[in-house]
Length: 155
Image 1 (tube, helix red, strand yellow):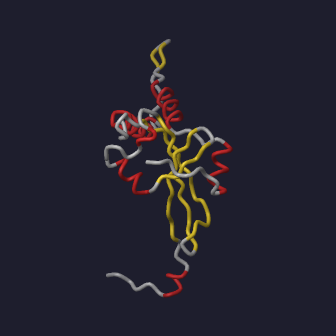
Image 2 (spheres, rainbow, N blue to C red):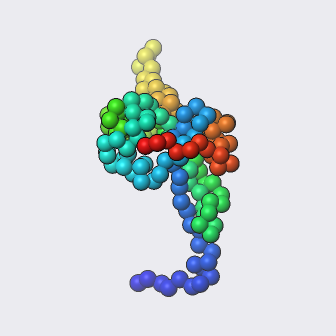
Image 3 (tube, rainbow, N blue to C red):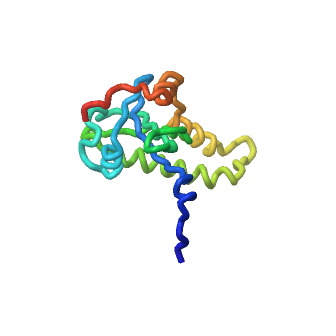
């Protein structure tokens, strides 16, 4: 059974949205949610400007007040590899999913050691994870916070 929502609850509901950016060094380029969806859906030519490159994607999650961004909740970054046809490199993405799954399971397990040999797989995967999920540089982080980013690339 669904319960009716009173006017007070509707008025004080928090709306959340997100924006997606491609970050190159200190330049920040917004991309539309439609382009981002097309990219992850495997549409050919979704990001032709970045074809053949590994780029940093930043997803900014924020609250809305009267349909305008109010407070940033989180900024997530990930490196993705774009193939020559503008699509995501699926092998690279599968490796990333493999790292994420191992990250959940290996955090509970202790590294095995047999004499002088140490199993350092978890440390290597942690390093790979950090390389695939870099922090934003100070200037690019500031540009996103200030809303002072470059014009969208011609896609």
